[in-house]
Length: 110
Image (cartoon, rainbow, N blue to C red; front, top):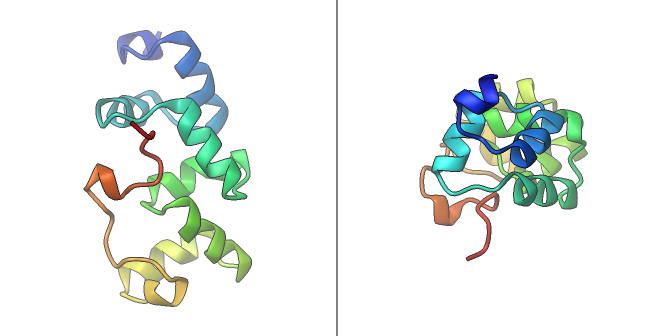
């Protein structure tokens, strides 16, 4: 029932569940214009395993940033700490979580 209460349709809910994304986060993503299948495709195309998508997404990383961190053996937890300490430049990313949906590669193409 949490998915129905979150007003996420069953198909989208099934994809979000497979990615490990909780109803509250799915609602936030949906309100921002994200589509579960686009998120799935973007992250998988970026080489991020399904089991890691929710953690990287929740920590504010893009698929490219996550892939770059993973190639150096950096975990999502380590990358989040580096970002918080201002060392994210070593990962090639930004020092803040983007709030502009047009800058986010998870945003479906219009």
